[in-house]
Length: 320
Image 1: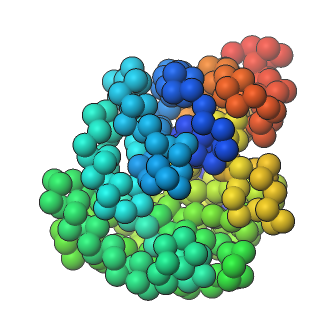
Image 2: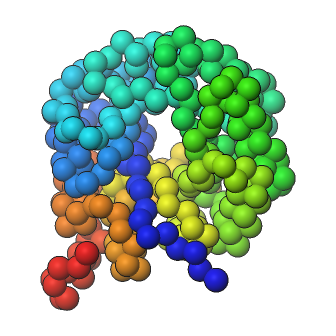
C-alpha cells in the first residue's frame, strides 16, 4: 500500500553544491542572482555557500561577500555549510546566514577516513563537541545526516543495521543534552541506492526512531534518482535535498567521470510530485527558468530533464 504524502518539502543545494565542484570561479553577481531567483519560486530553504578552506576550495572563498550581496526574501532560510569549528565561526560572523545546528555521521569507515582523516566511530564521538558549540551559540542541533547510508565506493555494501545504530545514537545523544533531534537525513552519497534498499532502510530507521522526521539526500550518479524518490514517496517521505538543474556532478563517480550526475534535480522532482498530485508550494515554471539561468551561468548543458523538455503546462493548462 502506498503512503504518499500530500505535500513534499525540497531543500535546495544547487548554489553551494554546484558552484563548489566547478573548476571555474563564477561571478559573484551571477551566483547571487540565481539564489534570489530561487527564493522567488516558493523554495523555503536554500544552501547558498560553504565556509571551507579558501586554499582547498577557492570557489567558496567569497562566501561572506556572497551572503552580503543577496537580497533576502522573508520566510526563506539562507543556509551555509561548515565542516569544522573554524568554518562554523566564519558562518556565525557572516551577516545573512541562517544558522541551524547539524550533526554528521558516517556509515563508512573508509569514507570517513578519506573525508576527515578519522574513522566513523571517532567522527561520531566528535558530535558531542558540536552539541557543546551549538549550545554555547544559543542554537540547537536540528538535523543529522548519515552519509554513505546505502553504500560506499571505498568500502562496498553498508549493512542497514549500522545505519539504524547511527540513527539511534544521534537521537539519544541529542536527547541526553535536552536537544530533541527533529530530523535525520539518509544520504546516498555515492549513488548506491536502489528502490528496494530505500524502502527497506526507511522502514528500519523509522521503526528505530519513530519520533524523528526522516528525509533523503539522494544522488543520481547511476540514474536511479527518480526511482528512489518514487520509492521514498511511497513510504511517506516528504523531505528531500535536491539541486536545481542537477547542478554539481558527483566527485565519487566511477572512473572519475566529472560530468556524472550529482544530487537529484529539483525541478524534475517537483514535476514528478505535481504529476502525482503532491503539493510542493513551488512554482514549477519559475523553477524551470532558474534551471535555465543556472545553465547560462555555467555555460554548458546541465543534467536536468524538464528544463530542456519543458513542463506539460502548455499542453494541459495550469495545474496545481
